[in-house]
Length: 469
Ligand code: AMP
Ligand code: ZN
Image 1 (cartoon, rainbow, N blue to C red):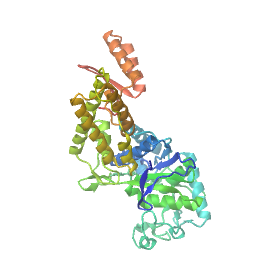
Image 2 (tube, rainbow, N blue to C red):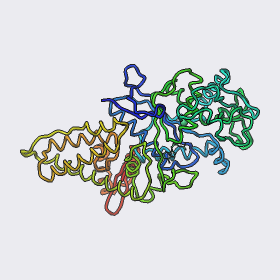
Image 3 (cartoon, rainbow, N blue to C red):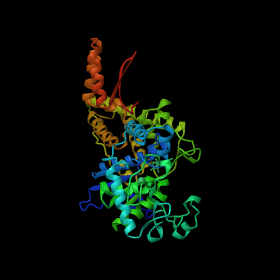
Image 4 (tube, rainbow, N blue to C red):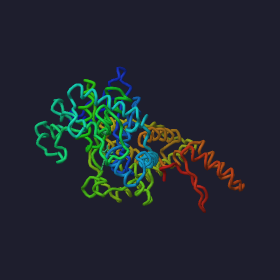
């Protein structure tokens, strides 16, 4: 088994081998949200592709150490907090919380840490790195008091995006007020304070100000994972300038190769355009949930197309996802019924799981993997229809599905409610029958603390996992 991944740096499929001498530990960094509003489902496409990657690596027995940053200071967050007339930290706190709620709804595994750019420890690291770059002549303070990276001093600048430095010089990517940079491609490491920033500032050897967005990621990645990473991900819009700048800053400080594999997902589109806040063509997760879809349906809809292919968001696509999940739920229910029937003299077969994982080994070929799943469903349903499947075989397919869903995370509630949750839910039904409302409320809280929600309707109690149907 060898995993192959498409590396943006080389523009080629490469065999995956982490730096760890034992070959098992993987250091993975993923650019996280800027918390100035609710993330849109395009952002979640990126986070879901990263989740799929992490879960697949884990299924192949890698130990993944993952960091995702939270950008809680930049122009947009500052503008938002001024507009709302509340301090920056208070303004961003609500969107941080919403972000974590959304991760749960989409069943995205939490990273090991979520460093925040405004954490004093991180700010210190950023200032330290900028100091090193200035000392080495890779950065300079301009007349406007901001500190810029000198791209001419970093010969590899442009290698990730496959840009020619000469071309960059003539791109005219510069705003007219940035006249005091040496080169229009130079980017800010430290932004000098101006009155728009209000109370948002930190002191530094170059005066009061705040870090640039790119240095935030270089500092947080190296602070928590070390100088060298195995995998760095993001959406394709992050390649330039953000990731290009991260390489220049980090390698400029450490002198070592920063990242072995750069992975980028294509955009989620709406009517042929990138879904983006700036275009106003976006849906937040809450918008889609409000239309009656569940977290797992959104998860499936955003994950079912290969991460490097653009995916068009449509409501028909959401309906197709609902139908696909319905088929899986029915299949799991039937397997369970079969697993409980006494075995008659039918053939014994055991499930073979290799096809599903083999497809994912090939640069996360999700279409191939889902093809294996649905072909398995078709064939095993046929055998159940024909009465050819014994209990042992049904059990082995259920085991197979458990492994598959460890990666996909799309099972319906009933199929995966753990025994202890079922016991709490049953106890609550008893408490309500006995009109013991206090006990009933306690059990509801107990369920909530474990990530499950109990709702009462005229048809009785319904217990669902957050993000479930
Ligand atoms: P941002 O908060 O804009 O920095 O974006 C957070 C992450 O979402 C980054 O990895 C972006 O590349 C990614 N992203 C933004 N818009 C889209 C989109 N429409 N489709 C896929 N990924 C996106
Ligand atoms: Zn980043």
